[in-house]
Image 1: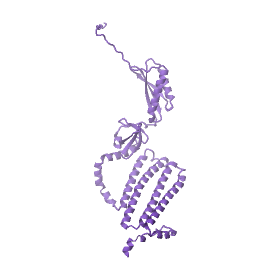
Image 2: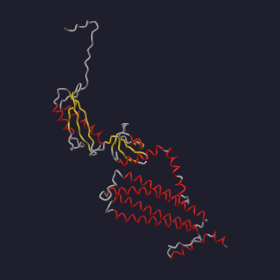
Image 3: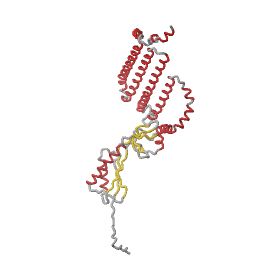
Image 4: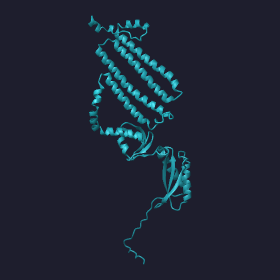
Amino acid sequence: MSAQSGTNPQLRAEPPAWLPEVLEASWHFLANYPPVLALVVMVVGIALAVLGRAFVLHWGTKLVSRTSPDLGAKFLRILANVAALIVAYIALVVAVQVMGFSERVEQVIIRILLSLLILRLIKSAMRASHVGLEILGRVRDRYAIVEERTIPLFDLVMTILIIGAAAYALLMVWDINPTAWLASAGVIGIAVGFAARDTLANLFAGFFIIADSPYKLGDYIVLDSGDRGEITKVGIRSTRLLTRDDVEIIVPNSEMANAKIFNESGGRWVKFRIRLKVGVAYGSDVDAVVELLEQVAANHGTVCRDPSPRVRMRGFGDSSLDFELLCWVDHPSERGVVTHELYMKIYKELGKAGIEIPFPQRDLWVRDPGRPAEEPSA
């Protein structure tokens, strides 16, 4: 009799304590058909998860719309998804339990489901931490330490903590004692340190870059190699640079930490100064040239009014008077197109004003071999 009770699925399909009394009769009826009962539990659980998610999003959106609509809605959506996942997981566990599997099989299936849930929660936790840091970064009066340049550092720390906690949870789910793993971490760490010197160098360099903040997200920088572009991400291992050709360059953090970097967005402001060299012929009216160049820059819609454009004469060239037009644009990315447009306009205006743009000339004297050389005069 005891053997039969261990294999009879009906004896295992007892209604849960939280089930309302009005549904217990239906539960006992469906318990005679374990697959049907499991399917009903799954469908009801998933339906409750979907409805609960919709309810939380509907009423929660109205609450967060008063504070931070964009980030608050993202954070609320992440929490609603997590709640729906947990409800669906509970429904799946109950469905497995009513199927009447042996204890060993049931335990393995539940552990697999819990492992999948943990892996899915890792992604949600990373997204929630990033959105939460952005929200804290906007509350500058309370959390001044969390700002745009330090968000990647905190994001990196949160990522490591989340992955570590998830790894520990997975070990506990599968009844693996983490103490033995931690005890051998010293020996393994030494081996990994030798095997992954470059990876560790990039990791620590990433921390130093974020802490020292020689550049931040959105800055335009120029590397030793001449590559120039916008910083799009400072990651654990590398820094990503998006060039004007829409090509992404991935540079290891260890190289970025030791390289000479020209930060075009650094300094007092993000504005960038453009230098245009212009040569005019000797004999030109230098005052008219200065006024013309300043007027061309002042009439350009993208050139900044403060600081105002200015012209400097730089010297006497071999065949020209050398001037330099100095003006500012709001962002380094505008340098190329504004330089092109100013050069085009300067060329046209100099032509209209009758001011010559010289080019190098050389006079060549050809000696007649049949004519005797002239005696030098005394």
